Image (cartoon, rainbow, N blue to C red):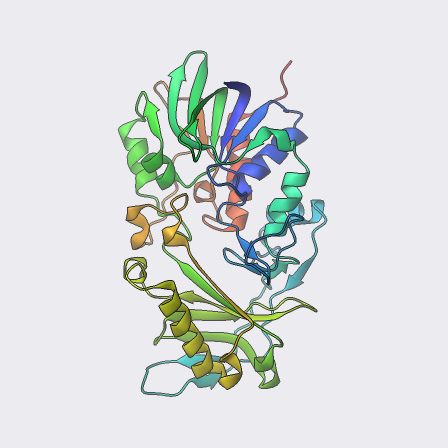
Length: 371
């Protein structure tokens, strides 16, 4: 058993930023419970050798979100500066390619340039997770603890978690910050007493960003497409990838990545090897024979992540209402606050949405140091 004033469920960007924010407020009495054995949630990066972050947190290519826009996502930009992380602009110089049909060759056209520019973090977005983790009390972050039940146990909330061996643990807190997507909270956690029906419905019907998507990355020895005056960006009605971008790192390795347009339920019936082969073939079709032999290839299917996606996420409805942060009445009033990115007012689903949702949730709760 473990007691804490605040329990944070989830150690993705929202959960770790919440812990960081609590510490800045002078609140040290918290615990973070993460179901996965690694931190980051929907932020996942790869290094060239084995596709996993190494012990020092050095990472490279993003398997989850890649960009943020500091010009209007100012809270996110402020955090990146505060953590002293290096950023660089997404490469967009040159023409883009369009695949309109399988009967036509790719069409070359003037490329799009984001204004304001989209920015990336040196070392990959996992550098943001690593920087936050290094600035909080690591003893208060427990991985491999999947929260299963929340029970009202006055004057506390009891959180019952389970590890990979099926062993259960109880944690007691005054307040719970839910750093998970609303749909995942509603489907994977049981509440005693039950959540209000309308709140449960809202959370259940809020789509989880990234959940139905998959991303393919191919790493090369050099960005050969740039020699052709191409930006690495492409759009395709042929597939399997529908949107493609340059994923190269400054002074580092060259890479291309693409989002698959194949629905999650269809992908589930195809082997990963077949998907990778189809993606590589598309890169050859678009960028030529130099794309045929990448140094490394990675594919991340978020729909297969049980701590990200539910059965409802196999096909996204595109429905992103702003769910209530917390029960307004009943036993759970003033006991639960949603702080995952889907609770953001402005940037739902984005990295900046996690920052906004945490700031919104902590302001809603008006947490102050004890004593």
